[in-house]
Length: 271
DNA sequence: ATAATCACCTGCTCGC
DNA sequence: TGCGAGCAGGTGATTA
Image 1 (cartoon, rainbow, N blue to C red):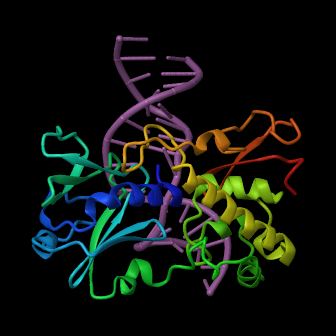
Image 2 (image 1 turned 180 degrees about the vertical axis):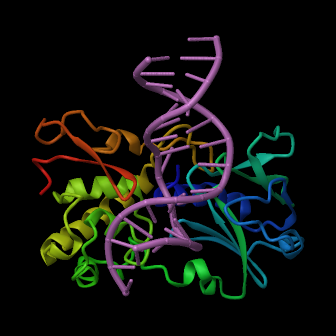
């Protein structure tokens, strides 16, 4: 479910309930996520005031004195704020119980998500340490993509989905940004010109910013942390539209797999 | 170092 | 209606 806009939407949705709250208890019903939830995490979080909730790439970071818990939604994860009376579902793996009567509940049917801990500076965590820049920051631009892609033979789509180059570009928005930039996803990363990368970087920023504004893309039953659905789906130009007419030229959109991920593009508009 | 493939897990849709 | 096949928003690990 979650790409960067969905994670950011979740962060914004749950933030008001976490701000200023103290953690009463962390309840782990299912510790077997992508990596095991650290056994001592409940003890580390108990009675700790929440100092902030931030996002880095698709990780949500809930900071307390001494460190931060690191949450990832994987493919099917979601978070929402519930109250004590809420029934516990089959895939409701973790509760963060707060002193203000609210509970942050983590749900993840496929269990590709994770919940980890890093003492001290969270950015030193192995999973965060070598991440590329945030797509919406000034540190990320077309020049960076151009420089890093020289001599690279991977398809440009795989290249922009590589966290070392830029974080937060998942399958939906990679497809969308490449369409908007008029670049064929199969093109060799190393053969794309500087101006075309500048255009691509701009389109990545635009599509992600717009998706965040609209509360993310609602696929399946995704809802943000505040329970509201995302509205970006109606803006999608290619994702999920294989075999249908291109919204630009009416020719049939092609679907093929790149790096095990379904890719949709227009042979006419993207070259 | 780079590129390609595998793996983790459940649920849903599709074709027979 | 039942059943196996294939697919799904991610990404680290493993293999050449």
